[in-house]
Length: 419
Image (cartoon, rainbow, N blue to C red):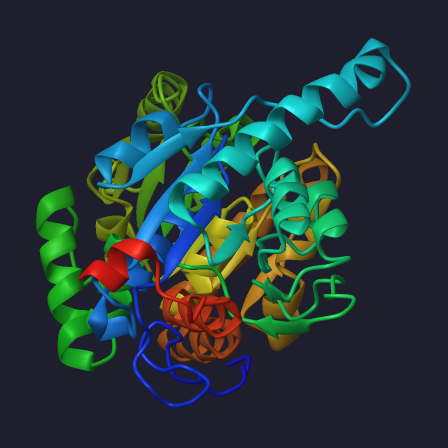
């Protein structure tokens, strides 16, 4: 498992002179837009307040986000305060947006500065994306230390900019090419969603692994004793994965169970292909072993039952699967800047996963992987390799790094003096 430096005492508990700090830590967390940014932010926020993870319940947290992103709903639902900043895309080529950028960015920096002052931030933590750029710039101007978390193997523009003066850069993957120019760089992993973190802890023992599998199978209508392939393309699904799976139905190994999450409203063609395969001479029990759902909110139940996963290779997916020690056949999303191909580089090098490009994926790739996870010895070896690259305590690691980098002001405020 990737290493990180030892944690120092929390700055809200111990000062440089060894005495107790006059007040709790105050943290501004910047990130939003997609679940990929919001989920690790929320996991980090929770860790900063959780004594079991080295946090302090008194820690004050303010989240900086946009009015358009998922954070508008998810942050208040998680019980954290949210401040808004205007969304400022950074143009990648000359356009009208480039001419409007200075004015838009100025307004966003102003909003971020106001958030820093509102909470009296000791540290600003950014998770990349549109929100982070103004937060980094505002923090630099205010003299507040910056901690950056980069979730992808290929860093984004905002984090590359902020790394120029950040006190620390935290990485999900050891192979990510991003360093703090003047500060420290550590591999912390990606903070896991609480439900996934709970499953990781439960799977620490063979008894817990078995219990989670049985409970998950009961909820999903699966057989806990059959080797199980989980297929998922995320909430929107992966159309090409669905199509290639549909072509493979008649050749799946006997005794293999499949849980296929097709994506919202993408299940009908797969169900039709399943009926056709059954009517065309496929194994008689295929309909019993092949389970189709369009969407599942409790992914931890699916992971608990899985012996292998066919999936995309987004940073969150790779982090969760390796933390759980699950073999995977990764089929990177064929759009964007290519980061999905890089996100799985470490686990592929360890032997804990395979990768096939979307355009190259065939039935034989899926059948070969299905045969592998149906073989208990080969599956176990691949699972150990996957786990060797996973980070199970990323939220606690990142929270410790934030605490170490925070600049606590030793001079009490008037309010604290009065107390």
